[in-house]
Length: 462
Ligand code: BES
Ligand code: MN
Ligand code: MN
Image (cartoon, rainbow, N blue to C red; front, side, top):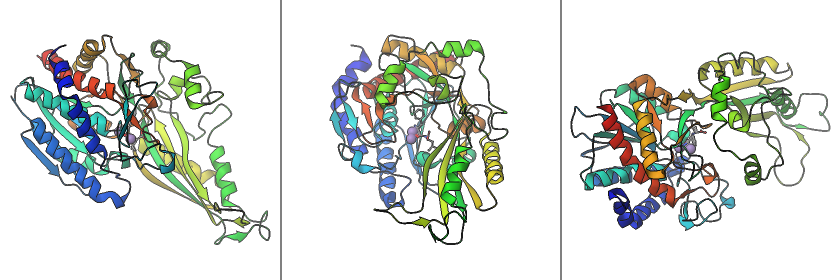
């Protein structure tokens, strides 16, 4: 056992218990009923950063939830790593689908996690992954091995669009100055197939409202004679994809970066088993844009999905009614070069254009962000790759993810530095779903790998 491994095995139980305590606080940023819990989580993180050895720790107020900032500057001439993470979590709904309460963490074994996994909302996204960095810091400070400067920026509004973080970053360029940004808020292929995320998709999220008659109507007296907004909305939504599952919004694909044959062939080398994929989701067959593989559909191709749709009568029994209004929430995942504000505008114009005269439509943008790709020849990527090589015994595979962390593109724009995405979660960890969990092995592997990134990044920067 090396230095890091023996430190981890000595402190393993405490590392787990501290994370469990953190997971007990329901820091749901989307629901204002949990305001005090979100604030309490920020305080807890501040204390743990201090205890880990940061000498400056602050709660930075914003117009929303605060940003926890911490730093340890050992020598201005050495490189600086900026760690970003988030302490807020998704709402746990639907709560009745959880096998144990979302904020009462329990450890259970699973097929993918034979050593056990912690089940709780936020276990993987992102409290568990963020806390690996705090514990890696503790290790480096306790053993006198911090090789460079470090800054922490842990926010509480990632799951609701990071609106105030953008302002904070723009106003604090000097304070946040760094040589590389390090984030653990993504996943990897499998515990025996380490990978580093090299891309994130952008996002445009909109809400639509379709209004027909000025009041709910008897569906017998008026049915067939006036537009039913739910019928119209579903027809409009259905028309947004053609028979090849291409998106029909004019201009939608104009800026999409097309990958070369070689790049696609390289991507196809990543291990992927379609049968296991289907089995895990209990589906007969996959579905998506013609001409692309499953891995391409969920990473290098843009998408449009309805996330929620409602209107009319949904209570018990039957009520004969034509609703006055129908609604839907729609997200578009974007790829490099697509501009989220432009796509939002294209959607709005198209949706208004295809609406029949018999209804009025309103399109309200929620939030969005640009996609991101990071090169694999940067010092940061090389340092991460070497770190994984040491702890997993294998070279990690670069892989583009389908998820979004919209703030990453803004970091590059404002702070002029690259982001390295060292994610240790698995797709099967059920982030945003009931029974979210994070493997204990993954948690400890992350704590073991992070200090090596610091070491190699410092060495390679010389
Ligand atoms: N950590 C996720 C993003 C993620 C997960 C990226 C796994 C890659 C792999 C993040 O917390 C998240 O959920 N992002 C949202 C967007 C945000 C604006 C709400 C998403 O991707 O839906
Ligand atoms: Mn996250
Ligand atoms: Mn999330």
